[in-house]
Image (cartoon, rainbow, N blue to C red):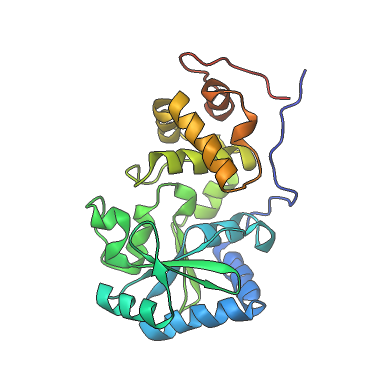
Length: 256
């Protein structure tokens, strides 16, 4: 029997014991990252209601500092004009989705006003307070935030339990980039050896065709990311690895 190929990173999975554990991991990391801590503190002093959403907090919940390599996304509960004024003061530039980006100490920080996040702006969710942004993430694993002023992690009560199931599911399906969502889904499922929830399985089966596969492989090369998607010969083989279904025109394969 051929062993399945592993795409796991070299550090072990280390899911936090509790939300308090996630908070502790973040506090220790930020206390040792002077430049990052300083810029995040400047956001908190200026606006009060500011939170890190998604990637960074998720990575600290699942792995801790060794697994954090993503950008930092901030959501700010403040008027657009106030956020834009602050962006100008710190020399931030516009990012791809209508927010702003600054780079501090090698860390890329993207930030948006709460009401200008894509899902809210497009009418998919109504966001009235900072915690509401949890309903706007594509993946359920990303529905977690760290409130900078209070130094509290906020998420659903069963968030840690969901992490232990190692199942990735859709939280809010509408999103600005189908290919972007497929790219992140493929790399997370294979990189962390996750199973997929029913909604995500249907999403992958519906959208992962020959054209999408070509774009995903090209994106991986362009980003100079660790090769995962491009190591599959075609859309059918990748779909088989992700959801156990080769689909029309794709051949199921055994990974080696």
